[in-house]
Image 1 (cartoon, rainbow, N blue to C red):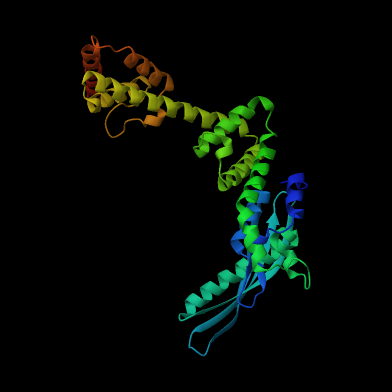
Image 2 (spheres, one colour):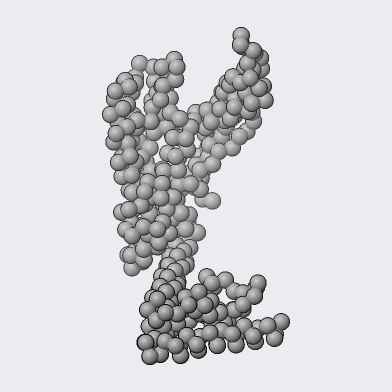
Length: 326
C-alpha cells in the first residue's frame, strides 16, 4: 500500500490538547492514560483497520513472592505500532507487574499489562493525544482532581463532536448525487431515523467503514446493497401487516394464510417453497412480495372467502407438486 500523508482532520486531532477527563492517577499519584483510551483514540483518528500493533517479544523479568506469599511476576514486552496510511512504525518497550496467589495467573496478568504499556508508549510518539505531555517533568499539563472532574462532564459532547466531524469528512468525499442515499444507508445500517441520532461508537464505526469502502472503491456497491435490503425489509413488514389486518377484519386464520402466502411467494420467486430445503425468505423477489400486498389490498368482505380459499388451494398445489418431484 502506497504511503499517504495524514489528512487535515487527522493532523488537527493529533495536535489537539489531551482530554483532561481521561487522565488517571495511580496510588503514587502518577498520571497516566488507560490502554482502552489509547485504542479508542487510535480508532477515532485513524480508523479501525488503519493501524495495527505487533508483539515482537515478551520476556519475564522477575518471578518471586512477596511477604504475604503471593506470586510477584514482572514482564517486559517489545511492541511495534504501525500507522498504515503513512507507513510509519513506532517501537517501544512496555513493563508490567502483577501480584496473585497463583503464579500462572500473575504471569498472565503481568504479560498482558506489559503489552498494553508497550502500546501506550508507542502511541505517545504521536503526541499529546496519547499522553506524551504527562511525561514532561514540571510541565503545566498536570491537573488536580477537580479539573479532571469538570472536564469529564464535557467529555461525551466533545467526543461526539470529534466523531461527527470524522464521519462528515468521509461523507463529503462521495459525489454529491449519492450523499443522500449514503446517509440513508448509514441510518439503515445503524437502525436510526436520522443520521444525527447516531451514537459516538456508531459514528466511529461508520467512519472506519467508509474509509475502507472508499479505499477499495466499493462505496456505491455497499450503498446499493444496504438500501436494497432496507426496501425488502419494509416490503416484508408491509406484507405481514396486511395479512394480519385482513385476517382480523374478515375472521380468517392468520397462521394458515401466512404459511400459504410464504409458499406461493417462494415458488413465484423461483425458490423451493416447502420442505427442509425451502428457500430463505430473504432471497424472495421484492416484486413478488409487492404483488401479494396488492392482492391482499384488493380483498373485500365479498371476496375474502374466495381469496383465502384460492390462496390455500394454490399453496397446497405447489406443495404437492414439489413432493411428487422429490
